[in-house]
Image 1: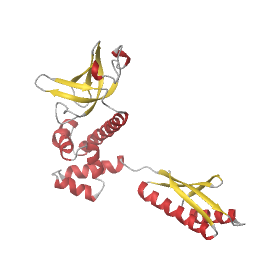
Image 2: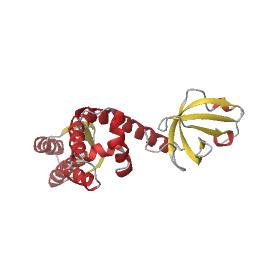
Image 3: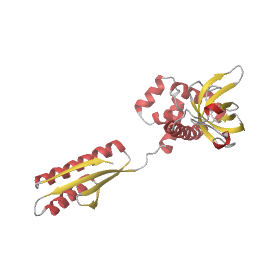
Image 4: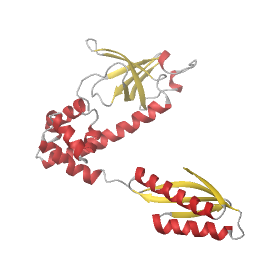
Length: 257
């Protein structure tokens, strides 16, 4: 739910096709309850259209661009053809995050003895206006810096604390696997043993896992909840392996995948 009744020009919105005519399609906007927009046939696709129903169907959920808004007449002009794949993907992810944020807000509201309508009036719309996205506001409560920022923007401490409690349970980071492709070569008679020893040492020291692909290729894997720190650890492990192999007269290189 948005704090304004109508979207703004240039905004990406998500809607469900409610009606299709020979030369236009009507779309109910999910984030703006009760608001319907229209896509003229010229804004449906970047090619000649024989039948508009080949591109839009009743009940279909689509991402569209707002071309113009006339609040007095209640008209919203939309475009489907001006939304690229990346923009569509980004908007759908944004909606998914905001839907999750709404559920989190409901949980925080219950902690404070409020219903959702009251919560939106008291803090939901304010978070959108001052932070930008409600989901981002919940993420900010997880750090002292983020909480200080919210205080400076006038967000009540009771809400910051309630949101923090919910965020700590709902936004717990998941463990991910970071990978590095490693190419190792040794020209020494015992080159295979040198490489094996270097990898084993790194596994013990950095807590990584090494997989043999096919000579001269190996893959290093590190599982962590900290993506940035994990990548640094893996790079350091790869560099230590290469340094040890070079001491034995070999060479190596790596790349993060």
